[in-house]
Length: 201
Image (cartoon, rainbow, N blue to C red; front, side, top):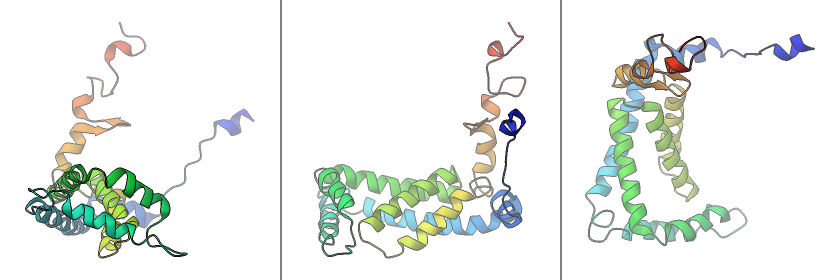
């Protein structure tokens, strides 16, 4: 029984998944998708950044109209906007339109820049997909399903999606929470302080 409890079961990914998401020879594919997605976010964010109804003298006007439009889609047996999300829009977003207007604008611009540069690609793609999901929950289809799908694949390919970008140098330096990078390692190559390791003073 003890032997059975100590057995670690690990299910391997299929070869195609290992190749696409873990081998740098496919990095060119993620580069193309990353640049496309990054440009979409940057252009959308830049449009808001230069618009007075988003970040100018009338900041909050556009998002107020957007939220009210979303709230109008809550009727019927199968509403485009679900009641729980309508509650969020009505009680969390609508009372603070200026804050959300600037936050969304900054988010779109930063996600776009990060994806184009290939910097923290997986994190940028995740937050991009989060914004897509919120737009979808607000009843706006447009290109959001396509952008959400691309972002999801970039998240899965986070190890190589930024290979042709800054992640090629940044990720080995910083590492991950479960595998510290070079700047967080001690002389023995581990993330723990030397004084805390067994057998060391």
